[in-house]
Length: 276
Image (cartoon, rainbow, N blue to C red):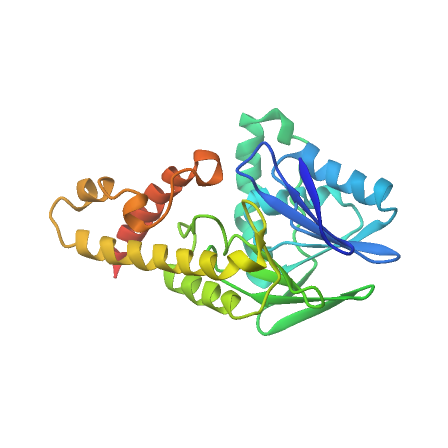
């Protein structure tokens, strides 16, 4: 697991095992707030060990930016913490997370110690604010990757933990392209110092405008090509010929996973377009 100090009392963690998934912690004088957990039990437990032993505080809150397993299944490794999320995140973790975990545990013995811990404190509209020492955390709704997505702004530092609504390659299979476009454009106007993506490396201030523009262009491009292809009789075959580079992105993102995610984006968008 890779770890980096982003600003005073703000840390970022990145998995070196699964899809460059990220998490964070904001530390106060007496307790800390974790933002997302990591995909593997040992990684979430390593986060907790660092916070308790190196930083010397307990975790009082865990914020889930959305319900997907690689960001929320580690809740159970922070016993006694209050879990915070969007209301839909709690709903999905109860309805989908529990059966999904049961299936995953049969395939992966390392997940047997995992238990789904649904959020205790949720919000639906507007924003939620949490004070940690001298830091003000503003939780706001940013759907697109999924419809329970939230982002967490460390207000004083202008650091945004964006969850999966901001990634090196936008991924909309469980979400909506138009919602994601709106969320990304909103993020681009926030005057940020850093964007902590849900997967991938930290985006620095000088890189933000280009990253926003590139993600917006990619989403507009896949919408355009899928709309054109969907009118053809052999639409599904034609989709397979649309490369990630055709849509303005590189296949090297996310350790080589980008091409697979791109294919899934095209199929999901085609299915959504066909339904409409």
